[in-house]
Structure formats: structure tokens, C-alpha cells
Image 1 (cartoon, rainbow, N blue to C red):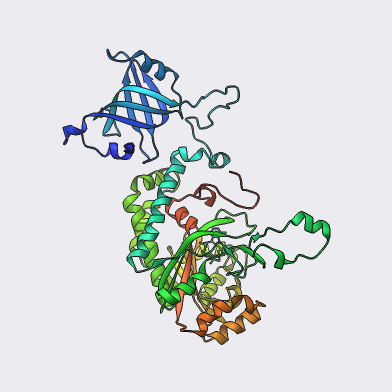
Image 2 (cartoon, helix red, strand yellow; image 1 turned 90 degrees about the vertical axis):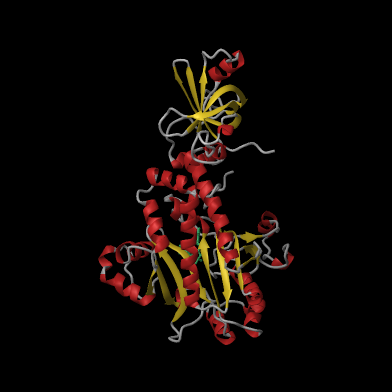
Length: 477
Ligand code: ATP
Ligand code: MN
């Protein structure tokens, strides 16, 4: 039998069910120890919820064993312990229940002062900066903030599977090692077993035919192309897995390794795709509000005022829509507000996305019809032959959270576009086959999972919503 979690213990009701006033054992890590005359209060947390369980010891109690007094004396923040006692209504404000404790055993101490070979436990009871916590990423889940992020992240991940399952989508596992560059952005990490040192000494040209896979390969930047093949057989599919981009952008919303959710839907056009994206995001906001209320209240109090209201209003509002051309016109009217002057043909910068969502629409907006030059090769060309059926979902504060499109299903047009972009069609024959045999209109999008977690928690830096962030110059742990 697994040990009871503090979250479950705290949801018991001693008043209505005297059965619950029984001897209980709790385990966890000590957050604080306070003393008041003969009473010792130990706040215990096991990460199952934000709240601690307060365990109250009476040192003057007749039955209080010597070993308990000793343990209480040496107990320090961060130690792991087992405590037994009786669950009782708490006289203290802010909590319904506490443990009238009689026994404690220290499982693993966490010294607050350095000892030979063991530096002091770094997470003492005080506020630590998020930057400092990143340096101890292996211990930071023991803080309220990182534990709350982990719980919300986990709930959202499950919510993603729930949403797609309820809507008839099959979960597909696409490869991580790939020979095709889906975004054509040239930001791939190379995967090789060639001996680079020996090669560079030899001065010979690299022969990828001799590499492990017999060709040049890299870590995937998107599972989309492979997802398209399965959507062209199972109608509705999605992938959800790690994605890699060797982009050297040191921003608060880019990682070199991040998780992406990519639904791909057959017999769906751009409008269906937009509706799906909106419904999907609202579903996830609703789930977070319903199941992560305590953690969201924490983020609201400590990180972003108005977070909960904002999520509530998003969950029930309608997303705005605007074409890229109209958006650029709007931005040009306020060109003075920007460092990067907007013009038709430019990629929307983060300051532009902020302006559209925060000033123009005061909420999420879906921008469609981007110039083909700034989008990937697979997007369906509009009749104007200049723009593609792309859709980016922008949200206040963060900018782009979803990027998607209807895919070009016309073989000739797709081949022309690939030629224009200097792509080697040989590598994509399998992808082109989808346009040769049983082609259907189809659409999909990619949601950056960490950006979603950032949005829901209000965390400003993407490095704080993934356990072990990978970015340029950063791969510790
Ligand atoms: P951006 O312009 O913000 O760099 P992108 O246009 O390169 O995004 P896409 O290729 O459309 O992004 O990827 C789909 C989604 O994946 C994006 O909407 C975003 O949520 C997420 N994403 C893209 N790059 C990263 C990254 N380096 N780190 C984290 N998430 C990312
Ligand atoms: Mn990018």
C-alpha cells in the first residue's frame, strides 16, 4: 500500500466523520519548525498540494518519548520525516485540520550548517530568486513555486490527452531523429556518430554516407510531417513530445528543447483549425481553473495579479480574428510605438504581437494569411499567390502560443514551392506521396507546451516551467 498523501489527509473531515479522528502517519519534508513554550509546530509538505500539514507536538506531554524530544531538537528545514498523530480540528487560523503529533522519526536530515563533505542545505526558509533556484534545479521542486508549476504542468499534460481523446484524435509517436527539416529554418541539432576530431585532423570532406544512418540526420524540430501521414489514414491525430531547435535566441520564451503538441486533422480547412485551437485552449484554461485552483491562487498572489480573472474571461470569451495585412495596417498606424518598424512582408516581432493582443484586441487574436516568404513550405497558398493559409494564435503578455496552417495538398503547387525554397525533393518523396494518393484538405497546428504552462501560471521565464531547461550554453543536470 502506498503512503497517504497530505492532500488526501487534508481533505478528510473530522467533524462529520469521527472515524477520521484516528491515528495517522504522514511523511514529507519539513518546511519550518516553530516553537512556542512547550509546543513545537512542524510544517510538513510532500508536494501533493501547496498546503503543508501542521504537526503540533507538546513537549510537556506525559507520553512524549525522549527520542521524540531529541528528534525535535535536531530537526531542520528540508529534513525528511515520518510523523504520527491524531487528526484534529485546528485552532489556528488558515487551516481546518492539523495533526496532534506524538511521534517523529527523522528519515534523512538536511543540515543548515555545512559539515565536512556536505555543504549547508541551500533551501532555507527565506525567499530565493528564480535565478538562484535555476542553479539548483535538482532541489528547486522542493519550493512552493516550482512544485506548483510541476503540478499545473502535469495536469495540463493530462488535459491535452483528455481533450484529444474526447474529440476522436489518436495519439501518435513521431520520431525524434529525422532526416527532414520540417520548418526549413535550419535550426536543427545534428545527430552523428562520426568521429569529428579525427575528421577534422584528416582534412577530408565529411561523407554522411558513412554516418550511422547513412545520411545527414538531426533532432526533430516538429513532428508535423509524420503526423500528416497518419492524419491521412486515421483522420484525426496528435503528437505530444520533445522538440529541438538550435536557435541561439536567449529570450524568456525560447528553449532549445521544448515540448510541442501538434494535432493534425484530415478533411479540415483553416477555419476548422482555428476553431479547434480556440476550443482546445479554452478547454485547458477551464481544466486548470477547476483542478489547480489552489496553485493558481498562489501564482496570482506571488507572480501575476489578475491571473485567475484573466483565465476565466478567456475561457468564456471569443478569440478575435484579423488578417496579417489588416494587422500590419493597424501596426503601421502606430509605427512610432515600435523599435522594429512594421511593414507588409515583415515577420511580426514580439513587440507587434504584444501591441495587437494588449492594445488593439485586449485578448487573444488569431492572425491569418501571412506572406508565403516568412512561412514554412507546406502551407497552402491563397488565391492571391502571395499569402498562405497560416494561423498564429497570439495571447497577451506572451505573443505567439500556437502556430498552424492548412497544408498544401496540391502536388504541383507544393513542388513549385519546394523548388523556390531550394529544397531537395528527393528527401520528401514520402511526404509528396500524400498529395499523389488519396489527398485530402488537412490542417494542423503546434502549441508550445511550455508557453501554455507559462501562460496559465504567469511565470515570466520559460526556464521556470520545465524541470531542466536546455538553452544555448545551458545543459546542466
Ligand atoms: P517564435 O516565432 O515564437 O519563435 P515559431 O514561429 O518559430 O515561434 P513554430 O515553428 O510555429 O514557432 O512552432 C509552434 C509553436 O511552438 C510556437 O507557437 C511556440 O508556442 C512553440 N515554440 C517555437 N519555438 C519554441 C522554442 N524555441 N521554445 C519554446 N517553444 C517554442
Ligand atoms: Mn522560432
